[in-house]
Length: 165
Image (cartoon, rainbow, N blue to C red):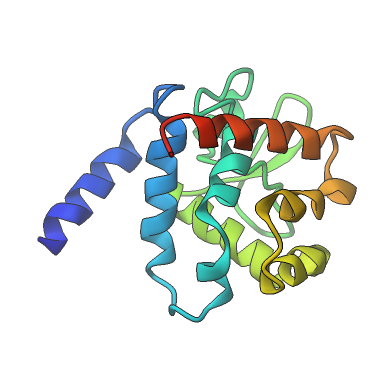
């Protein structure tokens, strides 16, 4: 049974997503990746919908509209490369971190939120059990788009109304 679940996960992660199915499918992959961590780890405390919402915004629901470099880099969270990390260069000169799989992109995002020096407020919000809406607000000061929190909140509400209910 375990191998059947793994096979399904591999098929899901290697296929392209439809815009409508992206949140549900991606959320399933996030949950599977989180199972790799200890139940009491911070990575497991991060709401899968938090990760899914960020990925939905960053990839235009898995379509990567106007973001072919991110698609090729399997970069679902908009993460820039730092130092010697593998990357693909965008037309605008941005070094996007390159991943070997969707799961690697998710693992890296979980690690960033768990250990990244800029995300202390996020970690406090999660540890204090604050609502996901408040967790999104902790990202505001690091976003390049001043409306990023509002965009996340809007997409999150749409995901909640849709297939993830």
